[in-house]
Length: 146
Image 1 (cartoon, rainbow, N blue to C red):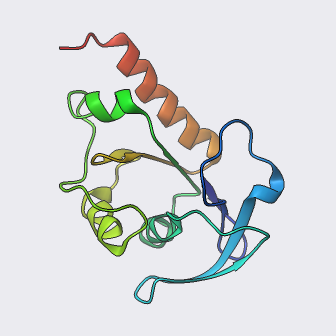
Image 2 (tube, one colour; image 1 turned 30 degrees about the horizontal axis):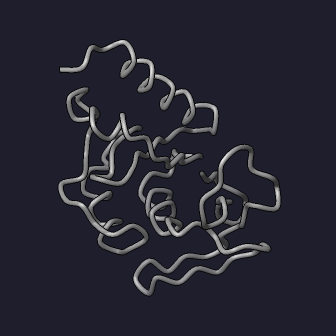
């Protein structure tokens, strides 16, 4: 997850984490060079391996203040049936190729799927990004599988 800061954006650390995140598990990304795949960061940990994706979304969509990226098997397997936008091709995570795939479907969408990987939920705030995720989960649970 990430949210905009005065100097860039704050993103959760790399590596898997379950449960509540602690304040020191976030890193601030101060500068991003998408072409060179370089980040300038401040923090005790490496930023998420998906930081380039977060940066590209913030650069493309100035109104977005928070990005939730998660992994949920049922959302992935049923998302297209629910009409959720999904990237055209599977790409390795953390790569320029996956960022290109995401930018191709980003448009005005506030929730979309990364093929065979996970979901992305966008909002003006962390609360709003979370509400979009909750809405998709509610729809998923209330729609019979085919």
